[in-house]
Length: 315
Image (cartoon, rainbow, N blue to C red; front, side):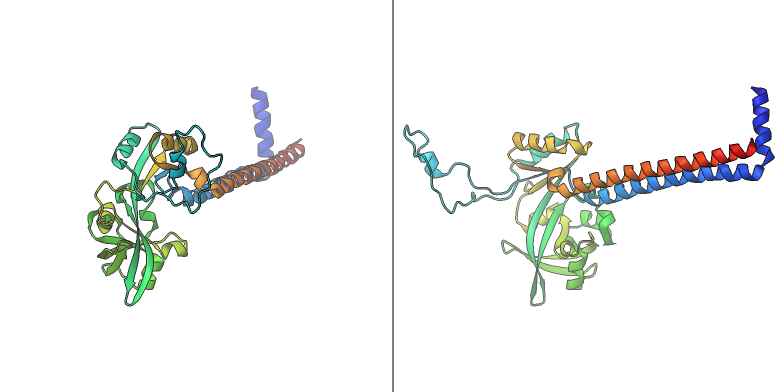
């Protein structure tokens, strides 16, 4: 064993330059393989984050829907000879508010579920912004600012102002960047708006939000929950959406079905709401594996050729 080690060291020292070139080639091949795989993995995480950072794994909501049983059907419910067919036209949904019934109890139950990472309420208000004689359509989203900052990267999408000002202040609003540019509204300015029910309010601008989608930033604005509830003249328990983050995103479809059956709500999981995201993520994963395998094969042949030539020259 000692003799073999001495022979190996002697051969390596005989042509030190070639030895260093061969070792450098091997190290470069391995380094490039690791670097490119790391780049592909980081790129996939970045692209996935564009969706995952702002999207809940499960969304609970309530939308008015037509009653599954119409009055004409109920009229013949106890009949021994009901009609074979019912012909009903112009069916309208029930006259109901888009709020979640007993939302605080639902949130409390979800917070105790070990599968759930976070539960965040939301409230949506359709408004008109008044700029001189012009009215601009807008949507004010009531949020729990601290939860949004921690679990939905709200602060990362703000291009002006401090998000904590939205949490602390009443009658404050964060405007979409495109909407703020149209209104020429600066931080500290007052903006006037009217809700769909006719309520007027003056809100102070504390920041700008930019998602990167111009049409979205032209409409979407944010305020804290108390401000939006006051705009709509609703109590503190009035909530239209509950956003749920899970520890395991793959459990979202089953969780959505379970919650829809358990509570009087409608549930939408992230895979259903963003089917193109799932497809894109799978395609990028396949590309990453293919690139990694090709690089590994090329690097392996390169290392083999270098070592083969070096050994042949030293023999």
